[in-house]
Image 1 (cartoon, rainbow, N blue to C red):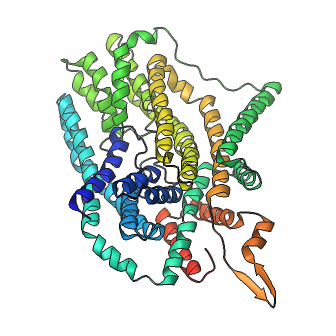
Image 2 (cartoon, one colour):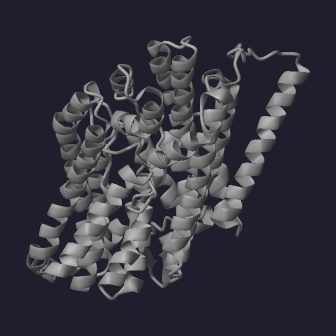
Image 3 (tube, rainbow, N blue to C red):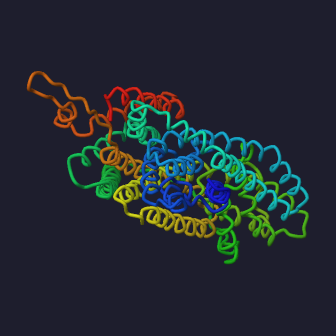
Length: 530
């Protein structure tokens, strides 16, 4: 591979991660986007589209929940797609390279976070104590640069100098090993669906998964149809539950909200909303294991703090209190940012808000907002849109990556903007509202819709089959046909449940991944799985 091509592909790997941290998590690092882009650069869009779709299925369950560092899809997808195309080996090569590449990428991500904790945060703290807003902003950009280079450099070295070794390795693969790799490609998506099932489900709502699965295998509804039905079912059930509670005369506990002694609208300017909105895209910048999104939160608050405190002794302490730990969903920072801004303004103008109250508000909002955002966006909307995009890609529709990008970011931008406006307009009242029944209702509906959609995805896109044929005399028994008569997609369902149980009992994703690869290699090589 030429130096220029390797540099360009390595830049894509680094930039896709940079976009997650500085551009509001736009999902540019998903395989359904990276695969076709790499294919387009290497002159084989069709293969890139196909490999991107298959890798998306494998990484379907990878969700950036909390401070986790899951398998790095960007590095894995770039390396897997690039080598598969240049070597002409197809999906088997992509699987064999992408998965180790993704694991390597996760270690690189952890290294970048640790380095940011040791250097970037120390510098940012120093600048905050001095009231130096420009220094804080430079530290944020430095942290993002560290993360970018942690992916760019190793990816470039692997692409530029690893092709000769990879080509000789694949050239020596026997037929049984190639068959095993093909079987692994079919079974590995179970990991993603099993993780989604575990994260979303508990015993009370688990039946929704099976409902979605059975609708998918016995009807022609497809993922979109099942998802639409899931929304309707969840809304009806929630309405019915509220009606039962009302008819029974049970009164829900209602928390007393903050009194509206002073109109919250007086505590911010219209320009504040726009400035904080644009800066909120950088909430995940310089992510580290000490403050998580704390530096990004402080960066987003700077315009408001500058207007309120610049040139006073209060400016530095204000910067310091917003450098503290913060971690929540990256699409919903506008709510705590808006509330924090109005509380800061009220503290400045009236003086009835303490520093502890502002810090406590952020802590109170983190958990509920993470629960809403992760369940609704990462574990419900993204798998549904991703499943539709995969279907389009496997049909050869080159619009699939654009469809995924546009649909996800229409939701993203709308949610981010209206959440920011809502945070500013509602002020401190939101602390009580977000802790109430509304949040639980939203999370319940999102979970039920998510589980039915995951069930539909398992029934639609998992293709684990057996080619075994038993012959006795002139009679032949095709095992897969017999299983289909009992229940279509029986093997994918069993595999998903087993993986979900293992993950729920503490199984590490990388261990499960290795086990699935081993099963695919052994049973595929023996001709038991296809």
